[in-house]
Image (cartoon, rainbow, N blue to C red):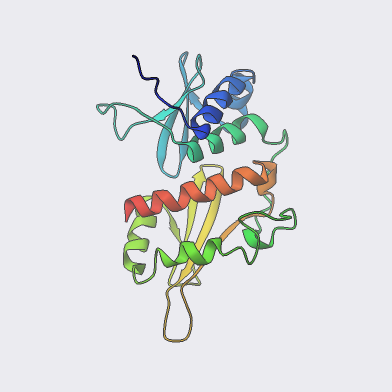
Length: 209
């Protein structure tokens, strides 16, 4: 008896979005974000990694170099790319004003709301590892900023960045992690996608560490 491979709900949703992507005007995406492209693919950088979107299937993939076999983008990275390319506002633009994602007025609840414990839990992963965190942020092409034991502007996309600020624990306070985004972040993505983007950012940092 043949055993059918089970596909997770996340994989199903990602596959569905690849089909949705194909319904959108790819030439418009190219012009809007200045994307590198050819007849078969669109290319976009996300956190210092080059992704390829197949123009016929909508699948998103990446490889460390041209020699290595391509890997399929995971749920968080693929959904972030799809959302920005397909659903960003026509006139999306930066406010050039950083805001803590916990305090964005558009957030009514969910994992990112203040007091949810998401950032407190995430900060524990970096406790006592400030030097490794700094090296990881620099590997991702981050720009050093002030405030915090480690503070970097990280380019989610060439046209859209986020700021990570981390204070390590001491005898009086636990480790503290903040993620800041441009005030107009929701010109580029939905609230739900912001969670995917931040999760992807933190996972990339941990991978580099």
